[in-house]
Image 1 (cartoon, rainbow, N blue to C red):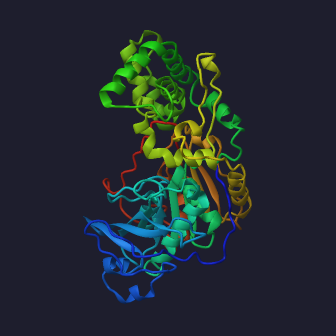
Image 2: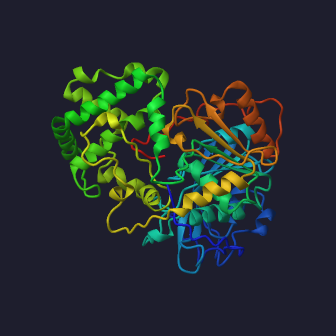
Image 3: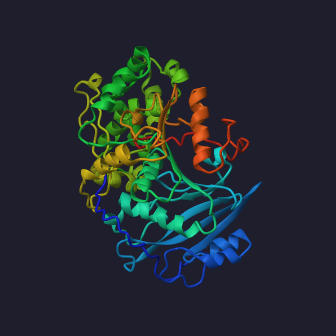
Length: 482
């Protein structure tokens, strides 16, 4: 994964947005925001939290949803399309606020993709019993400028989106803030810290890939040579190989599915390319999402499967719709970033022999051709170098069986830096602090609480578990995406 860093870390506060934050239907909006840095000291004189939020210039309400013990707001915030030239247009960026109390710390979350508009609480929020602000990443709909200038989708612009929202909300939520995210969200939290290291009191990053040199992916090959048991590896590889051997009958089934569902293949080019892309992802997707303790015993015998059973199994792991136009379109911003800054992994898969026609296809194949893309090789190197030498109070949590952890962040270590890397045994892309071994779990919990300014020696989250609010099922992205 990579990016074009045109970074001149401007010491100038990136002033706010132009014009009013045109609200959605029925939305309440702060009046005449004008040019602003997002702060609003007058809001401190307003007692109701909704009124205080809407007193922020450029903030508008989409809806409020009730939840016991909290107030939950879905909001729009007006952002410059280009933070370096804020007068050149704006767009509305969605965010949510899970409000508990302004006397509590705040956790700043992003998935790196779209934002959920239902109340939820990430693990660090439960650990510190705090508020939670969740941001939708720029260019994921509906948080996309119109028309879209894709050159303004880069990690610096996105980090500056986060910075402005933080500036706008900090006068209301004045206690300490932590940034967190999972996978691409963990990467996003890292990039935010690299560009704005004084905003957050700490970073808790989950399963964040770090593809420093895009063309050097041997770490992923080594991972797949040793992950799990030999029997499990060979079983899933056999299914993958059999799918390519039976390309003709399985492709016919995909064509029938596409006709029934209205799927098209304009972006990737052909049904055959889409077919192979799904099959090539099969091994990766298996280890990324399947619970290894049980899934290995559930892999069917490739040689004896019917065509339909094989087709259905590949669909359950990889998703045949993934590389259709309909499956790709919501993730165009990710593939654009993968092909311009973030990088994308490629694995050799020698067990396939000469069955593959295309190999691992590059991100360029998954982005419409009318969107120009140029790769910037220095982006991830800059971030990696900064994390290795300058990171303070940064925590990374990885899963033992997650392929994305093969290339991981390695922050500066030692008491001076107070940074940590943990690996949850037996965990996949859903690794969490709760899955760490007991002493590491207690240590990670203690550091998160200390960073947030609510130290505790209990080694446990400060808020009780809520099975609805704290539901942390891994969102299964059925393609090779972090």
